Image 1 (cartoon, helix red, strand yellow):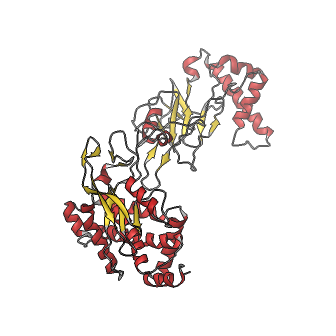
Image 2 (tube, helix red, strand yellow; image 1 turned 90 degrees about the vertical axis):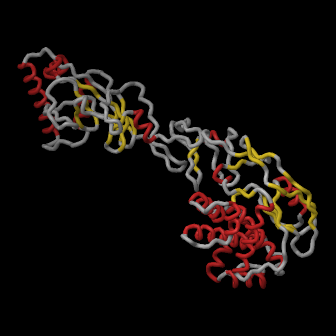
Image 3 (cartoon, rainbow, N blue to C red; image 1 turned 180 degrees about the vertical axis):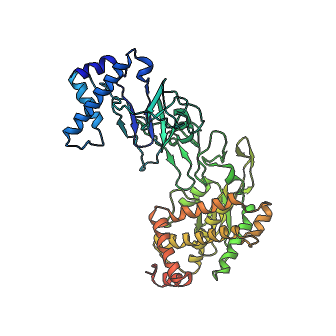
Length: 486
């Protein structure tokens, strides 16, 4: 064992611990100084040391009958040497794991660490992994399974040398930790800060299933406003409009928002024309009123035996009531509506349907989809469809709402295509654009992915029937049996 004594007396190599990720994460850099630049040993001592190392490796080779394992043999030899000297190979307390990339709940990524060999027992020349030239003297780095001149080990993002003891790795590309964070660590779309890690050290965030808006989980509980139409959260660099009834409206939805009964009339008549185009003409002139949230809730309480959503935005009345309606568009200033003008209107029953009430302040396409839904309720009652269960009635009404939305979105995608609400466009003095088409697709997404029994399951069952048998045959079957065709 004399060569062992020579090995540890004559060398300034230090036993260092490093970390090498098998997934995206952080890695330690091991700094080395070649023996010929720090030791004062003579040339003969270096030769003796190299010879001793060669003999040791040869002995290990013979122990395995001529076969030297490719993995961990150097590490095993080093561990045996260290154990014989009662030197601890690893620090008593492991370095804490560093958070890996961001994840959506259910798709988590973890940083997996492994340990690099404690010291190098090879005696071959070292080639820089950056410039591919031999490293002769001076300091060098050992990481990522290669050796590097310090000036050659550079960040993939900024191009500057990495001099810190830890760096981040994406694939085979190294990064400064701060550069990697700027590129890959997600920022909240609400507060625009880096999304913090949770107690487990993982980056956890919420994301809207349609818009993809990412935000810190804390914003679900800190009273951050959410648009009542598109469901997006208010960003810190924008301000939503308050509608004075607890609802907020984002600026995109505000662009086409319908604010009073007179403004909604052209859209209402266009949807009636849409029904007539499908041979579903409404024989009675049903009054339509835009109302505030409280007026809608009061009217809903006066209805008997009808199914409603927890958050109602439209209502097909069949009872006589006095309703407060919005008679003139309110002013908008200081991020809120003001000077709301209302009037009382007595609704008398002349047929099976008294009136249709629609919540004010919603964008054109959402207002139209609610109108199409409530008009279908009116059509069913006027045509003698009686005592339908909620899943059948709400399901077929949602199908008509979905069909109208689809026609509007498709019309907006075709150049020069006519729209069922062209008069409404001229009154609003605006054109259909990508923002509104995206909103229309979102409202269709809401209908298709509704999780409720009556509106969600009912829509999907009714939509399957209409796709298979057509709208007219489906309606005839409902009229005869009260059920959807199978």
